[in-house]
Length: 259
Image (cartoon, rainbow, N blue to C red; front, side, top):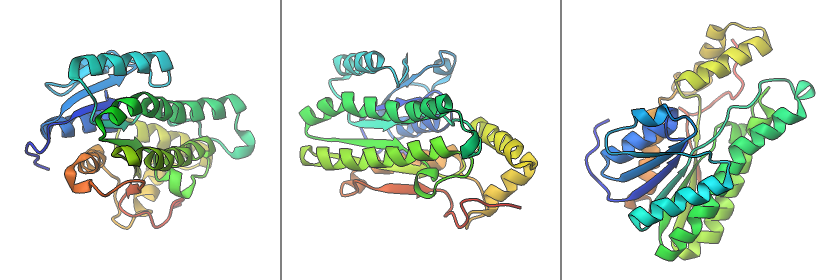
């Protein structure tokens, strides 16, 4: 959709070099914001929207996140919007076949990054007496997700973190919300479909069709759909929206579709 300049905000997006994070970077930039993204992939940082800044940083590394926030504040003077977007898809396996190390890695990849981003940006926003934190959770964080136990558990955790942050930081003028995407077109969901097809003994095409059929709108989301919601949640129009887990999934009517 067309976006005109609607804001002058300083936005930090973790894992902003590809997928949903990159779409967020493009959407906020188009809306008139100053945008800084971090990513663990140096190549991704060479392909950012014009005007977007980028830094190599692992969102699950506390020193890296502390240093990044310090650097941004030195250059910008503050951070108005945090998009805690970093996450990993984790393993696809039945619960009785799930390796403990895979479970732990998935929880760390999805929860540690959200926690560390919030931890280090919170003092900046508290000093400003204003700010918006937007966490990327998932439809799996609302319904659960067969064969994706650690991912679902982590994304439920992201929602619990967000609601707690909204309670703690609300008195300081800071809002917190989570976006819960459904299946979003792109390379990441393609890998999920391939792994689930193998686990369930189905074809990739059948898995994809089942996911689309499991929504009222009958289609998968685009990364830009998630980015549009993030821009709204950061805007003055959402000034009374906090502590909410908002789905952008075409309305899931069957969270485990089979065809």
